[in-house]
Image 1 (spheres, one colour):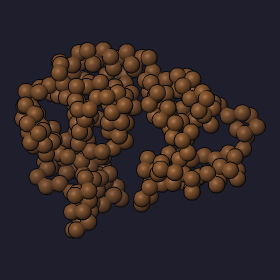
Image 2 (cartoon, helix red, strand yellow):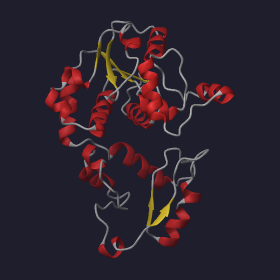
Image 3 (tube, helix red, strand yellow):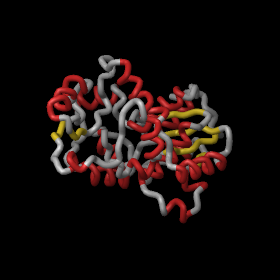
Image 4 (cartoon, rainbow, N blue to C red):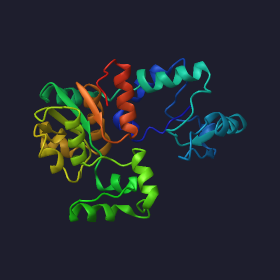
Amino acid sequence: MSFCFSGFADVFDVDYLIQQMNGFVKVVKELPAEIASKEPIQVDCSKRKGQFDYAESVLPSLMKHHYISLSPAMSQRRDRYPLHAKAALCQACYNALRLTKALENKGSKLLQAIPKPFLSLHLRFEPDMVAYSQCEYSGLSFSSMEAIEASRGDRKPWTGESAHVWRNRGKCPLTPKETAFVLQSLSIPTNTNIYLAAGDGLMELEGLTSVYTNISTKATFLSGEEFASMHGNTKAALDYYVSINSDSYIATYFGNMDKMVAAMRAFKGLYKTL
């Protein structure tokens, strides 16, 4: 199996992954010349309704062509995997994933600087995230509404009954104000140390900070030069590291990072996860 490590290698230790997968799956950084000269058969694994089944959709192409290219599907069925495939999956997702040494050192330094005990809060209320969710919100500022509209593109918001169903299914990221309401409903004290695991450009943040005042972010502890030298993936990796090792963790939207953090915390026996 060959992986394209662009982006991945910025965050995770590739050599460690290859070493840990030895005996499960053979992973190479580059394809052999006789294969690299060919064009792989493209297999579409894009998100679709229901769960994606590799046994039905990918395995026949792999057996026939021996050389395929596919994009991962997060909502895949795993109940039909043979035991050795389940073991390989678990090894890859847990034991074989380790941040690069530079990022792990930076994450450890950040973790030490955060006042203890602390709650890591993953907040997803950036304009592009809200536009992607196709949700409508009332009571937002004019500047927030403008930013959301600018990010929408052809993703028009749900309306009528569809909007109601979408929200009830938990598909709409919580606003900072809604988040503060949930934290208070859980009797989390307003003086709790909160590390905000979030991307740049959060909107309506005062809805949270006006209630919970002990809030910090990466930028609070990293020097301006350190912060400026990082890009989206490496910034997210620090949030991932801190969130896994926090005293408690709360996600306001169930995205891919939250699935990884919640699973890794369960794997490590850290059960204060919502």
